[in-house]
Each structure stands twice: as C-alpha cells, then as structure tokens.
Image 1 (cartoon, rainbow, N blue to C red):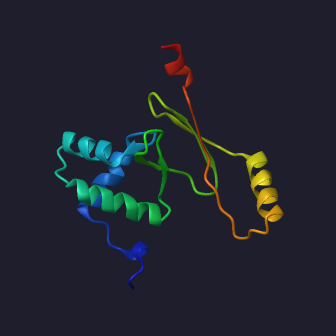
Image 2: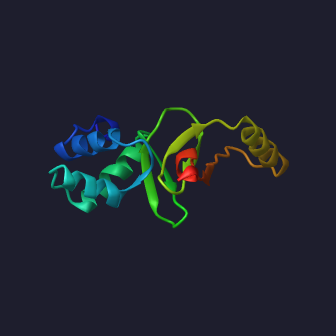
Image 3: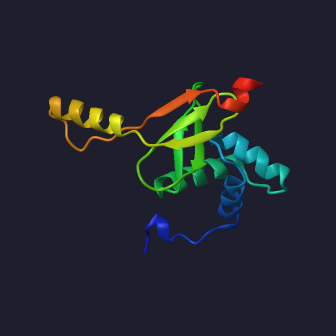
Length: 132
C-alpha cells in the first residue's frame, strides 16, 4: 500500500510529534527544529519541513500563514474550525464561526460557486500579553 497514512513512523517523525505535543500554539518549522536540537534530537531542517508538510496532508496538523508571511503549524482537533491567535505569544484558541459559515455559503451561492472551502484566522493579543 502506498498511501501516506500507512507509512511506518520514523524516529524523526516520532520526535517531531513529541515536540509538537509540548506546545499549545502555532510554531514555525524553524522553531520546531530549534526545539528538537535543544532536546538533543539532531534532525535536519529539510526533514522537519517535509515531515510537517506530510502531517498537514494527513490532516494531523493545521497550518496558517502568520502576519509576517511565515508558515506555522499546530496539532489541532478534527473538524472544521477557525483560530484566534495571539500575535505576541502565539497562544491559539480554536473557535467556531457559524456566522462565517452562513456568509461563505451565501456568497458562494450568489456567484454560482460550488465545492467552496475557506480558512479564517483572527489575530490579536491574548489577555496575558495585553496586560503585560
């Protein structure tokens, strides 16, 4: 079987998965790489990028582009949802947006589009960072 979901876990992937479990918010591949090295895991940056992308394709991670254009990754729950992300510390809260869903469906139908998907991330400052 050649399905990516059937791949045997490698030592590198196991280390990356463990590293992602230690953090709550979105993190860049460079941040994951630095954390791995700090914990003694000598994994190349290219391997970190490839593994994170594979995990996104397997629906194990969410990804978003940060305000500065960098791709960031996070373990996430299943099912469609959105994120509220602190632009200072990266704390992330999963949110549901029924109003957004209704608006997206209405706009799509109005213009004759079908099979429409969307992403939505809200960026702000969490209560901790706002009080600092």
